[in-house]
Length: 242
Image (cartoon, rainbow, N blue to C red; front, side):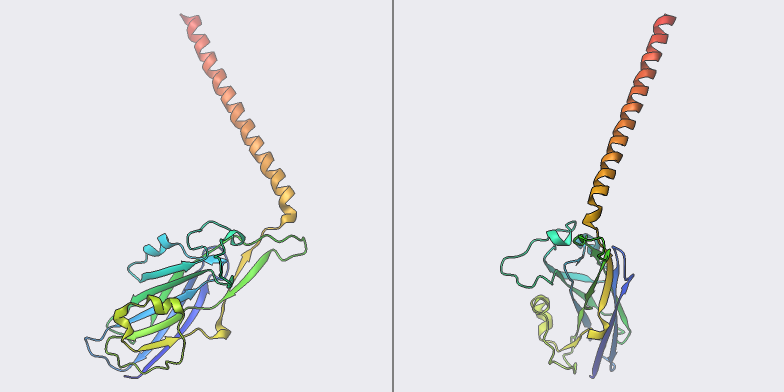
C-alpha cells in the first residue's frame, strides 16, 4: 500500500480570545481491505499565551478523543501569561500546553478529514509605554499529524522524529503498526493577534473603577432609603385610618 499524507492548518479567526485551529488532512491510499482501520494522532504544541479548556474538549467526544494534555497552564485556565507557574528545571519557557488527540477514520480512509481544536487566549503581560503597540502577534506551528493503519503496509518516510509526548501517548496497540507523519510547513505557521493592557492607563482605570463603585453604592443607598420611606409612609397611613 502506498501512502501519502499531507496537512494544512489555519486559524479561524486570526484574532480575538476564542479562535479555532482547523487542520485539513489529505490522505491518499490505495484500496484497502474491509478489515483495515486507520487512525489519526495529532500533537499540538501551544505557546504560553494559548491554552485549551479540557471541559470544552470533552464535548467533542463524538469527533475525537483527547489522550493527553500537559505543560504550563494546563490547570491555570484564568491566569494571565506572566503569572503562569514555571516548573523547576524547565528551560523551555516558550512552550505552554501540549495536547494529543486521537481520531479514528471511517471506512472511506481516502476521504479528507478535518479536525477542529478550540483554543483560548490568555491576558498578555501589559506594556509600560505610551508608544508601545497595544497588541502582540504570537506565531506558532500547526499540529504534527500521524497516520497509522492496522494492516502495517504503509509506505512512508520514517526519518521524522516524533515529539516525545506523542511517542509516550500513542497506545501500545498502534506501536507495531507503520506510521506516516506529516508536519506543518515552516512557511505556513499560524499567528494570532492579541490585545495588551498598558500600565500608563492604570491611574485612569483605577480612578474610573473607584468612581463607578461609589456611584453604584450611592444609588443602592438612595433606593434603600426611598423604599424605607415608602414603607414608613404606608404604616403611618394605616395607623391614622384605624
